[in-house]
Amino acid sequence: MPGLRLAHKVAVITGGGSGIGRESAILFASEGANLVLADINLEACTQTAELINERFKGGELPVRAVALQCDVSKEAQVAAVVQKAVDEFGRLDVMFNNAGIMHGADDHALNTEERIWDLTQEINVKGVWWGCKHAILAMRNNPTDAEKGLHVGGSIINTASFVAIMGAATPQIAYTTSKGAVLAMTRELAMVHAREGIRVNSLCPGPLKTPLLMDFLNTPEKLNRRLNHLPLGRFGEAIEQARAALFLASDESSYVIGHDMLVDGGLSKAYVTAEGEPVLPPPSSLV
Image (cartoon, rainbow, N blue to C red):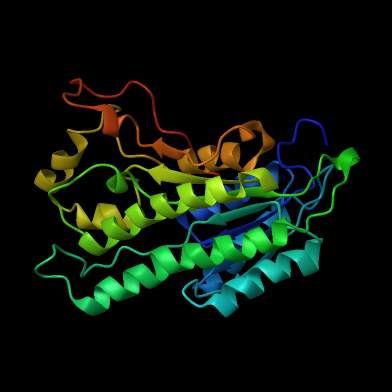
């Protein structure tokens, strides 16, 4: 339908059970996309799918979401998620490789155990690789339907992080390294597959107001050490990342490839931030 940025398109979102993945799933559905949602936590992923199926079942362009359990470090499971999109909906237009971990035992280079390093790379790097590989194979075979605005190729979005670009003295060596690898992988894939109509970009979130981060920043000292560096005077919201992902997913970003899209509230451009409280509230969640 005109006006819906993802009308008739099919998207896979890993890590679809919570946070950026859940907000993106709801937003994509509101713009006309059918969805296959994957998460290691099947219960959370199913809740997202059920929310979408209930909320959008009566629209002018009905959409549907399917939930699957997936450990993205296992190629066969990622391949099955992509195949589910093709079997269920006939194509794959958007692959949002969003699943990842930041392990609580991840520390600096002298303290981080090898098992934490390996686990982080398996999920955050290899998981993105598998997602890209199988998305590319599917997108090459997308049928063209000019009337619906559908075409060969598609958009791949890989979640990286602002820490892949900026240094921090609050170490998480395995996570930071993994996200730097995602940026490098994304750029190479973007160049290799650009003329196939496959666009590959990275989303680089700044620090988000999540329960995990807020529980960790459990003293005024911890909290203010980070807030002092944020020009907007607040942490980001998952919906703000979802809106950026929507742009990269849609054909509006047809000339954007190999891009590291920083959605960090200006953090990466800041030296000294303004004083005072922000006058605007953060946007509301879609959940």
